[in-house]
Image (cartoon, rainbow, N blue to C red; front, side):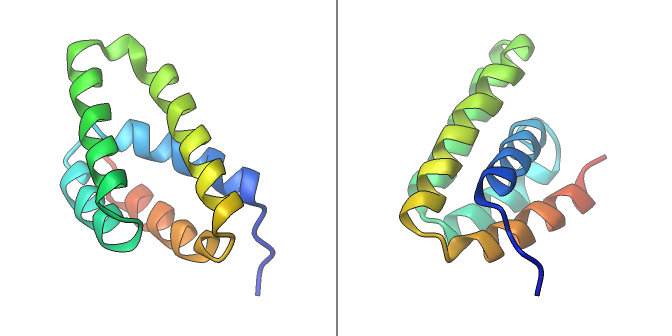
Length: 96
């Protein structure tokens, strides 16, 4: 079993989720986040998508917001690192 470093998982997730928010992978990711992490994360991804559609230059700000969210999630629930890693890997595979 690989060692999962929570900060690294949060950073990879943040970059992946912010980028995926404006691609076709968004629809799969939205449903998956809702299923595994809860509706608040699904809603936050929708908000990220709307902000990025309005201002494409907000990508780094959105990635930063996701990093903070995922850091907090992994601090509170370290067991989510494994599923989060799987979601990141699957999302990355679905990106253009």
